[in-house]
Length: 65
Image (cartoon, rainbow, N blue to C red; front, side):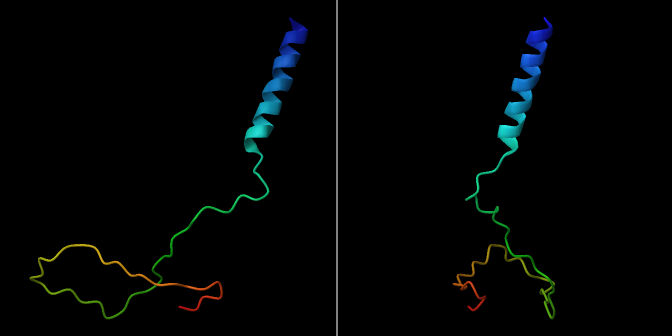
């Protein structure tokens, strides 16, 4: 009984370490850009329009659009 308990503890600990280990080449998760500040944004009082705005831009690794 004692040896079985020790074996199960060792195997469980090994499994936990394997699950927590990340591959070396794994990229960080994608984080979308956030709005830092907005100025002069007015919405007409009687506006009934709704929808989505899509902006298509190519940004280089240096941050140039």
